[in-house]
Image (cartoon, rainbow, N blue to C red; front, side, top):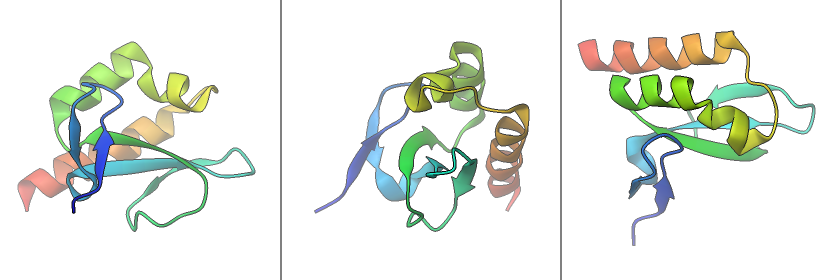
Length: 87
């Protein structure tokens, strides 16, 4: 059975493996979880630029984590999404 998660930007349910996970740990550090196994509160985003743009515009991650998400996290997401597209 597939594990479905909701994209914070487009709100579509997708298989967990098709999404990028962003995690907030106990020390309130926010980072991308490429393994999908880090401890902490997770939020998911589709691996496409449209959802990333929507996520940035709506501040979806800020709402999901109830805290301010730094610009560097969005830049890391952009690198991950654009980088996987070129492969």
